[in-house]
Length: 302
Image 1 (tube, rainbow, N blue to C red):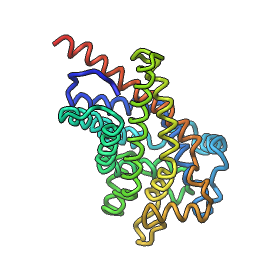
Image 2: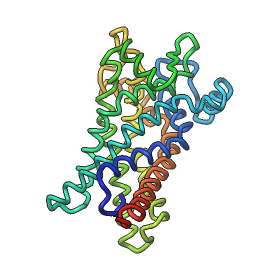
Image 3: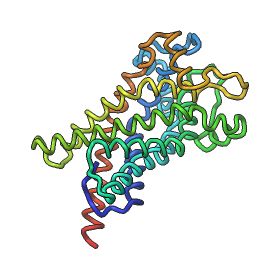
Image 4: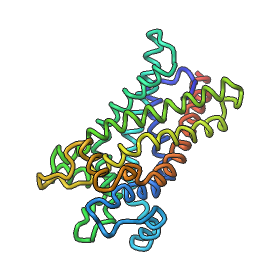
């Protein structure tokens, strides 16, 4: 992450949230495709998609171009909570460890990534549940759709209809995924950036940030895809009947492998990486640039 100093913690949190929301405006259609593909094949649904391209064509034909932006309010709200917490806490944790005499190296970066991901998962799980359901609603027959109006309507109805169990559906895989994802993304970015800078390939500029982000996106997508599949399926399932399809993350992973094979754990990897790569690039470049602007125009002028 950025090496700029004297940036207050509250500014770091604000920059993280703004960066995540800005990146999401560009990748929302890819997020929707990822969700639809991860649910494909579940329960023998005949309406499912054969490939990401097939999914794209079907969604545009049946739901229109705007259908690709279903759940945008939920995604923006999720970024405002999840990304704000995970990136903000990551940097604050690093700063705190350095104050106690620890160097910023791989072990401290991993600790900061795990702490940030764990905390962010608790804050963001309700919006994550709403996001999965809103982006997947169009795959259902009209009479089965939940038809949430927006993120706030979704959260209200989930709380009223399903209670705490529904609001925090998939909390276990969400926490595990968030810890792995935050560590994989931010630590791989920091390590790649350090290698590029120490070997003189780049200066600390946007080219360095771009290359580091591309590598980070690949690591992020590869390590988190199985957990993302389990999380998506657990958050999508109906919880009002009392009989749930998956009892926990192990059960979700085992049933997916049993019914659809091991490769099903990487369903949606194409759209996931296609989404992760630009989102990671935009997220981290926005973060670096906003931090630099704040340091230059605010800190340096005081």
